[in-house]
Length: 111
Image (cartoon, rainbow, N blue to C red; front, side):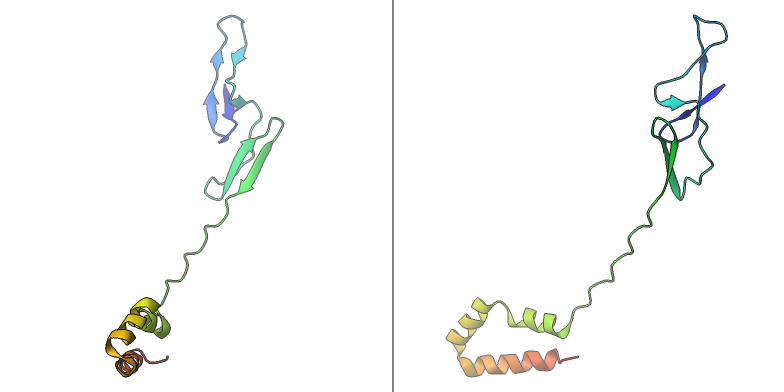
């Protein structure tokens, strides 16, 4: 004699009552109501106290496309943060900075 687990719908064995003839015991996490047929790969099932509820397992989220670094990303990295740029201009002059910017733009042209 079997009962059904209320969270998975799988069969669980029942035991004969040691006190009463012809009575079978049932655990607290089981029911006598037979679950509907379902594919555990695509659905979950649970017993809500009066009936079985079958729910579709949601499809996994697709993997995001890998980020492709753009010319702008490469240029920003090569320029460095603003405080480094200001320090460069202060120490080496604006003409040196313009030369450096031209080199960066040649190395990382617009796409």
